[in-house]
Length: 435
Image (cartoon, rainbow, N blue to C red; front, side, top):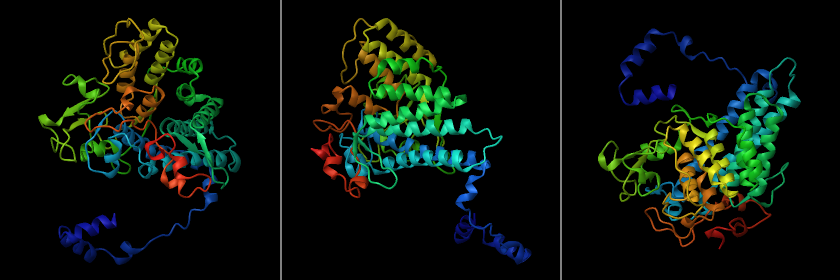
């Protein structure tokens, strides 16, 4: 607050009022400070601190849950990179440059570590007599599961360290296994976080290719389940809002979501800046036509991380993989009803994926429904990878793509340059930087 007042004084606006304040107030009233002393680690062992610890963990999740979607949108066919950041130049052509994917990786690992730390503190260092703590533990495990799942969906390989030891490169399936373990721990505590844990398990089992288990878990999730990462204008703003409203770093022009113009799908609302209502009609690169996403239209817009809508998509995909087009259609229509959209007619065939999407068979319908439902939530790159989507073969939104676009992010430079167990080339296996 004092820094804010000082800024006003330098601008010459509040100087007379401040002078009057100093003349009429006693110096002791202004400058006396009561030092509360240091907060010791042991002070956190008070059960009254449990909600505060979990709020901190939730903030850790929010830190990476807008960074991953920002990167994934530009790396995939969700949005066109329309800005001038160095990473945008790489990402929009499908190059997940190893030097440009550090931040979200570090933040996700921080959330994983903090969940372990908080649970250990609560269970082993607090007197829990008469304390209702179980739902806090369940929440911690759910949030940790989300962090593991996010690493698995976006990075080609993962690295987990233990007790100060450097970790080794591991397949991304290890992240999905870790996510499933965390969600199952949450389930063991039951209560209000149980359904969120089932939703997380459904996505973790889908990541592992265990579709029967994924569908069974998804069936336990209500349509209206919504767990979100929180943001706030006064502290941690939603980066997707910042980079499309405060700055035009990415655009929906020439995307699948943009193809609904002017009758936007309610899951992917857009403003065509060519028609006005935006600071500029083009992106920050001065070239790309700016169509602005409105899904996150406020600095404090929340980002979904576990939903009933995704559960319906998982059930639909499981049915499609089993060749059951009737059941597939039922789940898709249940999904669409959440937004009041008209039902689809059962497709005549399973068909195949294509780019651009014609939405004319079961696989292209699933592709379109997942794209719109999970739009800008950091989930698209995983779909492209696991489906070996045709967009990966030189797909272009606005800027021409690499002949084979990256379908996952490498282990970042910030990890491989300090970890003696592998080289940066090994850490980039499966990406352009590793070829």
